Image 1 (cartoon, rainbow, N blue to C red):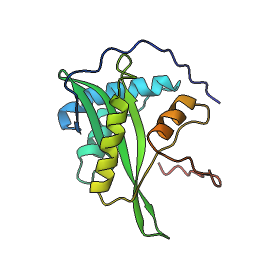
Image 2 (cartoon, rainbow, N blue to C red):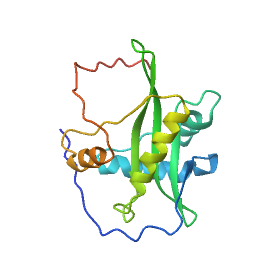
Image 3 (cartoon, rainbow, N blue to C red):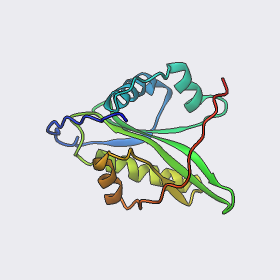
Amino acid sequence: MTAVLKLETPPVERPAVLTIRAARPGDLRPLLDMIALHAECHGEAAKITATDLDRDLFGTSPWITALVAEAGGQLIGYAILVPLYRAMEGRRGMELHQIFVREGHRGTGIGRHLVARAREQARMSGCSYLSVSAATGNFGAHRFYEEMNFQAGPVTGMRYVQQLA
């Protein structure tokens, strides 16, 4: 089990103008930087490359959607969404795969804005639900999602993975 170390720094004031928008090709470098910072928060190293992210966001068959939070011409947060499907119910959903706000901007409501926009994006894609998960011991994330009206659901069964390449 990996321990997640949280160092709290006082947030800066929320920017006067905050834009939440879909990622654009020019956002790849700052997105990669934030993905690496997110991995560090969890004691991991990001292995994603610019080629991977470009393919998955903007390639011929985009696999993910990324929303970015921008203020003062700088990207200060992101949310990555991945499609889901419940075949027995015929329901589309969206997984809020990752959400991240740069240190110094946390606690200012930017994460809430990213979740709200993710919810809108899922609805516009014909989804009837938005799903998110958090590590068992990440109580701050649990509180955040519960405050955003997510309901905890039971974890059922085991997830099996088979490497294909």
